[in-house]
Image 1 (cartoon, rainbow, N blue to C red):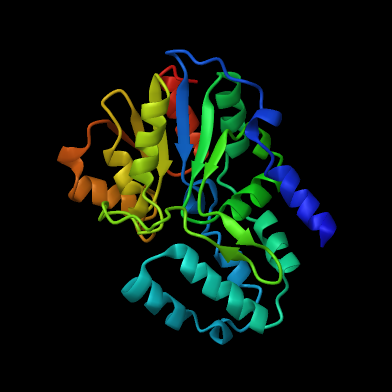
Image 2 (cartoon, one colour; image 1 turned 120 degrees about the horizontal axis):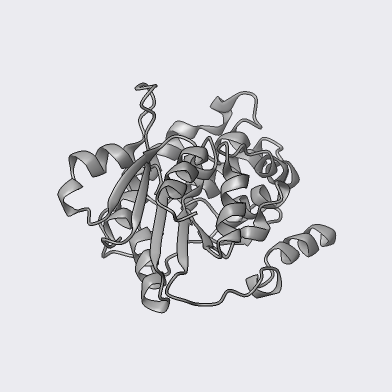
Length: 271
């Protein structure tokens, strides 16, 4: 256990100790990525819920009902899942290992390297949790490219993983985002504290809409959409197109894999 905590501390060390220092300039671009079903192909909760062969034993319907009708906080939902997993004999080490096997969108590695070479900053903004993202990216040798992870923090690892809210106290001003994390406010924070040439935001879900609406005319937003497969619906694109298109101030591009994003950024001479 001590060895694991030592490992966790090492991947949580200050960014300045592992990433080169960036020279602030008017040409510095900020790339903000959602994680679940954006960087990752599936939701990060899927592989840990699959650790139990009979998923009925997790009573996910009850957990999801409380999430959708009562508290609306993803971290609380996942804490309940972790508790049910423990009741089924699943150990923390098994959950951590499942995080490390999360499959990423094709082209992530090349895209991250090219952003890094162009002196761009990469921020992961997710309603999952920091531990999931760190373990996944560390396992795939991509964590070195990350400037910051903005996500719900893990407070406890043993005996059961407990995730705290990103927002304390819970936010009540944004009606689009969940109470535990408003992505639009994070966009505002980076804009207020830094002089970026552009903010490029990449997402897929309904909780990415607020962030897109906070972008300015000079920025870019990418919403996931599979033109070849209409059976898979990614809410961000449909909501922006059908409900908020006239409020959107920036360019909107669609993408299906990270390769698409890289092609568009090269076409626009950003990479």
